[in-house]
Amino acid sequence: MKQATILIAISSLLFLLPFSCGKDNQHPVPDVFFIPITIDISSTFYIELNGIGGWANLSGGYRGIVVYRWSYDEFRAFDRACPHHPYDECAIIEVEDPPIAKCHCCGSMFLLIDGSVVQGPSKYPLKQYPTFFQYPNLQISSW
Image 1 (cartoon, rainbow, N blue to C red):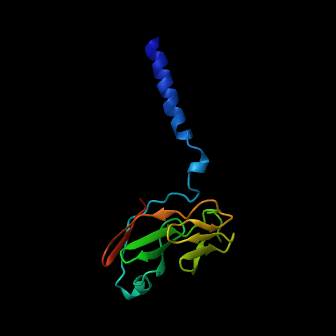
Image 2: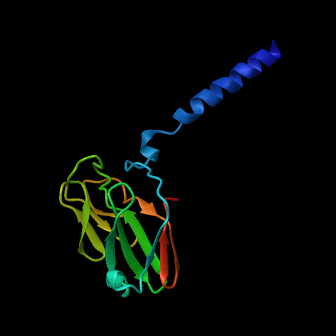
């Protein structure tokens, strides 16, 4: 009897575990797995990434990826989907005046240094992807 009660309690906890985190703890931009993207920044195709403050749009992620060169050896990569309403067709961020990017659909503005919201209505930062840089190759992965 005691073992059955313990088993029921454990089963209940395991069942409720996926529901324990509220929606507020989840990022609204869907997680998308992709094969790591590697680009050669010395290529003329990515010339804009040669200088600090340079940026480029790439394919990948949920709605594309914007890469921003933060320092000599640091890059930031963010999904271009606006986190305020990521399922709308028009909700794609565009770099306005680096390091600022804007969603022309809702007007939210984001800082490409860390993805934070500069101006709402978005309550969420941009979804960031990990980067690894070893000159001349920059690798971006989904996790």
